[in-house]
Length: 270
Image (cartoon, rainbow, N blue to C red; front, side, top):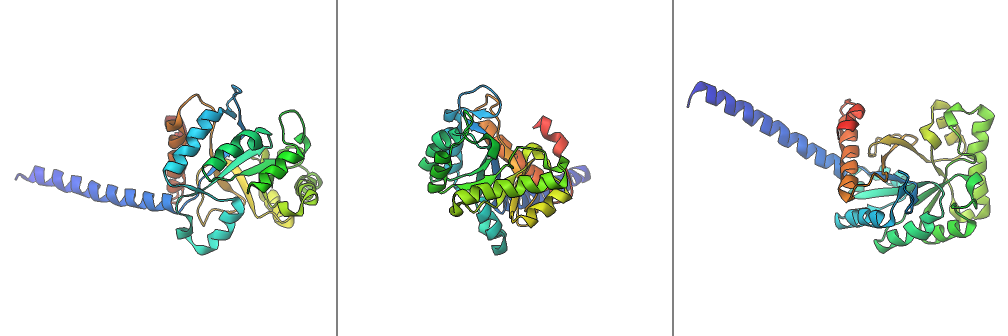
């Protein structure tokens, strides 16, 4: 065997070993992380925020067939103390704004697969056409869903004045909890993905335990609870393969972040 061939084989072997180790590390990371899926509507509307019911069901079936189990954001926060092994194949599914189809369409589909979700309600929209009524909210709670805040007026919190920030967080939470003490509202999704250090302080003051951003990624025991990543799911006219691809991208992007490498800008190539 020539020297050149030996060198080539050594180099090839080196990359095989490195590749195998990296793949094993990535699989371990995925098993110890929790994707938080972000939806808005489950309806036949044509905009990107409206997921057709049949496509949504195919996505839930994909998760079910791959052994995933749903948990709430509160469960995610509480289980972090148990260490990374507590999160094998767990996920959270969330819905922003508070549309009535979350109860009337999404909930029955998810219930079929044993799943529950979290709905983030913008209070000012309640009972508007297309949005949740109290009956919808109670139905979701009775079916095991978590009720969360999306502020009162659906405003960008980082751009709010201190008194406005306080009112948005406090009033939306208290309004829901006063209606039914069993709601125990203490999670939030940031409208427009707007947050900063002042928002974190206000969240802690008002008893919020978790907050979801709009940044692609998955979450581990080390992810700050007020900066939780989500897997953003849009109506892009694709089948369930795109759903799986978005999940994989979120896992890859968070895995690389754990090593200090931000590949966010590469999303357009994925």
